[in-house]
Structure formats: structure tokens, C-alpha cells
Length: 259
Image (cartoon, rainbow, N blue to C red; front, side, top):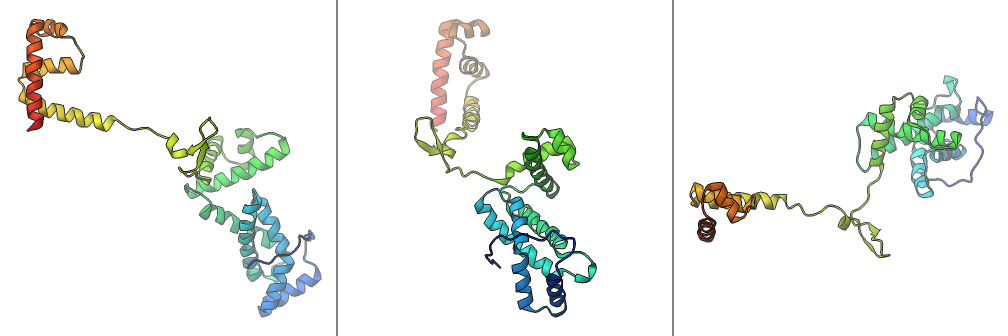
């Protein structure tokens, strides 16, 4: 349910005003739809306050206002006027709980484990509060002291917060010359490792047509990049002999590859 009403000041008295008490008691007894509607109108500013506590911008506020309104309806339906608590003191935790569940279940591009997710939200709220109080970004140990978490848990929570949003690979980014290109074109590179593995496997298979000596000479030339003279010194042959062996070996390899 979405009902637009102008901002209003929510009573801060420990108990509900007499008119609200009568309305709450009557609804608890009769479950009349008109009384429920009146209670929604009366306490919708409380939902606005709860949504504003979590909203980062106007667009987010509209969505969170809907979530907080759901929490308000649940609070109205579940509130027992006989329990001695004021309605705002009962409704606010209900709405905050609904908002936290919304963040936990719907607002993460990559969803972390539940405990880590709750720590991330806790650290985010504490960081906002401490920044306002200190006039600067709080240190890890300050956030830890404020939340009761360990420094390691705070660091893990901050890492998890990155999962809140995702960027499309098609998103435009500047290339330094004033022109925009897609983000995906700036990431990664061709992996030639697989091609090298395939080439090596192919060469290994083909060289089986050669004798062990000729195979070693080809390996020294192609893998170790030795000159013909260096190969001759290594295997005890003349440079001309090595040249002839390489020429014949390459011809044999070509024939094997074409077969």
C-alpha cells in the first residue's frame, strides 16, 4: 500500500496519545478496515523516518518507503495495546527489521553468507554515524569498537559490501581521448596458453616419426634456440651435418602433419 501524506512530526511521548490509544484498542478488538486505514495515515510518517534512515538517494527512498510501509502494516496487525508499550516503540523495530530483510534478500549483486551480510550492513551504518560524529572517515578499530565486531570482521564486512552493486560489461567508460568504450573491451586479454599447450602436444606427437637423435636435435633448435654450431658441439656432429639433419627432420615432420 502506498499512501502519500505530507511529512508530520511523530510523537516522542512514551505513551500513545489518548485518541491513538482508542483507535489502536478498537482496531485490536474489531479488525475493522477503516480503523486500519486511519492508523496507516497516522503512523506513515514513522515509516518515512525508518526508510530515510537507510536511504542513500531519492530513488532508493521510494523503494524503501514501500518496504517500511509493509513493516508498518505488520506492526499495526500484530500490536497488542494491552502489552504496555507505545505503538511507535513497537513499530519502529518491526519496520527496521523489514528493511534489513529487504537489504539482506534483494539488494546484493552477489549475495554473501548471511552473517557476513549482516555485518556489512552493520558496518555501513556505523561508518555513516561515525563519519558524522568525527568529521572524517572512521578507522577500522573505531568501527570495531562501535559495532562490537573484531577488526578482522570489519575488514571482511567492508570487502563484502562491494557485492552490493555490479557494473555491466557494456557500461561506457572513457578511453582518455574523450570517446566512450564498453567496459568489457578494457578487461582481460587473449589467453595464448591453451594454444601453446595444443601446439606442444602436436609437435610431441609428430616428432615420434624421428629417431631419438634427430628428435633431440630438433628440440635443441626449437626449444633452446641453439645455433647449428652449438648443437653440433652438444651432440658431437659438424655444423653441416646438423644442418642436413634439421632439413630432413623438418621434411619428415611436414609429411607427418599432412598425413
